[in-house]
Image (tube, rainbow, N blue to C red; front, top):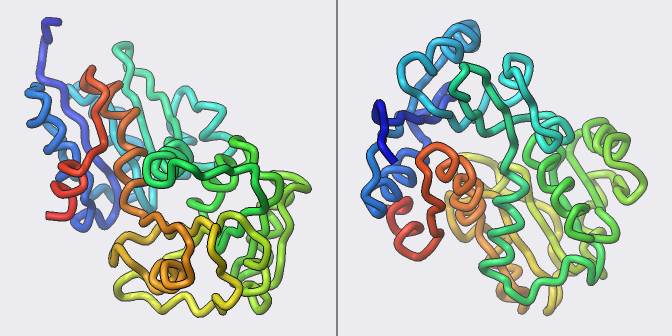
Length: 277
């Protein structure tokens, strides 16, 4: 394939200096010997639309999108995937040759692929899934869990109204519980997921009682700084299968990289090491 110009991609947010995506994409570009560059860009909300319209002319083929732009980019995009519409946010933009912007959400894909890679015997239809949190990440997780056959979602959030809104969006397979009872949801569950930032470095701990964790449950935390949160430590001590959140970050990037640079990258130990370095 001959390229008229070297493809450019990047990640946009505000702030963006903390993003590990440049390490990830830089690793893949080097590993596969591909021409291309991946650039972090701190873009203020009031400059978002004019920037997005300008980037294709500069050689950009797409972007990853993080806070606070994941909802706003859907209003700017010319085409929005069904997945992004269902979730209400986009994390991946594809710039077509005619200048149109296509918005998609690969968070749910990344979440499920992380579990499939690191918990090969996970059976989503084996029982209810507990989801802590009702933010943008939770929407993607709930959509993906329902899609792969989880029979019931037990959802709890510190602000109940946000959880109720997700139940209204996704239907009666989602059951909402008050945050004060969040620990009770774990009993009899097959899968437990923390989608909140609680437990992250610099944030408060996830103070949900974890007494009901039991062997055979799959427990995963979207937080990956630290890699092993209190939730994962306690789950492991109780004999649960645990999966850290870093793999979701890695796997959600695969579809965008393939679309922008023409090669489907592999998520392996060298990938993890490059991002953690």
